[in-house]
Amino acid sequence: MIKGIRFLLVLCFLLTINEKLVSQDSLNSRIKISIEQLVLPGKAPIIKYEINRRDLTIYKSKIEVFSRKLNRVQIDSLNLIIKKICLTKINNYYSSGYLDGVVWTFNFESKESLKTITLDNYYLPEFGSLVEYLNRQLPKKRRYITFNQFNIKKNYKKQN
Image 1: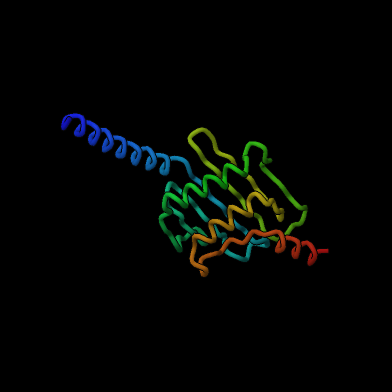
Image 2: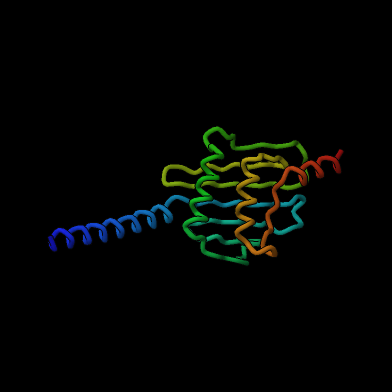
């Protein structure tokens, strides 16, 4: 009886350790994303959000200005947002045809592939939810990248 209880305790312990190792490994290998924002004409600094493993880092003109670790819940939420984007069905380049405004470049890297999507004064709602989620993980004063339909429409009206 005691041997049976010991066996069950050891088995539970090993399963718990294995689950933590597997989930930690998946956190470290699933996500590698970068989002760059360039305002044209090139007077403003290039802003870049980079998610590499569990780190969210912000660069302003290639200088790191902020960094923080994302927890498991944040990483899992980010993965769900990315799955909803369905990268295989999205083209690599979208443009509104205007020469000034904002250009965003989204890079998604996995073990198997790298997908780069450039949005030249163009709004795709799928990416809006990604930028909004990342901005919610940051202090308000560090929310540098803006990506919403209304700002892009305002730019269109100003140019017409």
